[in-house]
Image (cartoon, rainbow, N blue to C red):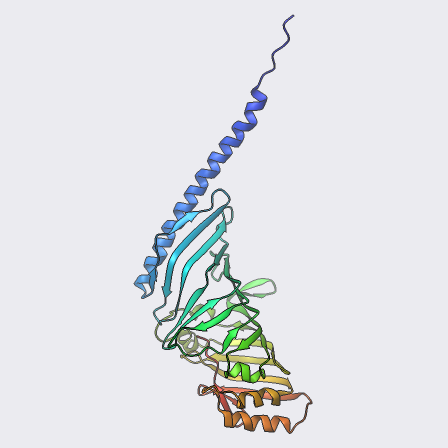
Length: 344
């Protein structure tokens, strides 16, 4: 009796299904890659028409099957204001099933260009930025530098920080009762264990120690933060009444520390802060004395010495102080210590 023959259809069908799915997914991937290249080219052209300078070698797109990876070799991106970045390579990656969330890295470091101040090479263990919810009015943005180093190029102005353990910046829509506000952003900045350049104001304030800063705020009139032109990114925002509100933070400079708060701060058209910042400070005289001994031309050493003497006269108990940013300067009482912080 001839034994029954078993059909091999049960073995073939699963492989056929996998093959069809793989072909469909591959088709989707190539469609997505093509759309990304098309949109990148259109966005670059739009920026160039607005005065940006963008150059790079031919774009490389890869990452099949589960990622989309776009590499820009020899990238140079310069805003109309003259501020910009360049890098040997910029790499942007997204999961193929979530093309609205991108991670951008600079694997070989990058160079930051500052209008009128020269360029700074930024290295370290990691430079990356993530962008999520790109179709929303305001995307979620997170940028971080892991153990970065900052090296001014020959002829560039000094940079206050030589290195740090970590630098982080976050920006996301402000939530009110769980609902995103229409024109407000929450921002967070962390600078962890920064080491100042020799003779600079950071090294002076930290007394050759390390400086850490954490500060958060809400940005009003966020839609006006546009137009990175020669007038500065804050010109239109400031003219429209833009402010930083609910400012809170903490500063540690060597043995001195302070809690920071302000109901509102604004910026001038040139990006320098204006307003009042309240401090509850511990041992502020140490930081002021360090500033007085710094070799930075930006610091008013006589004013810093006067502020240090006044602070030390109060002893080691916590002190309530007010920093005033006015006329482009930073004031502590009658002492004009240094230029006001410049945001861009």
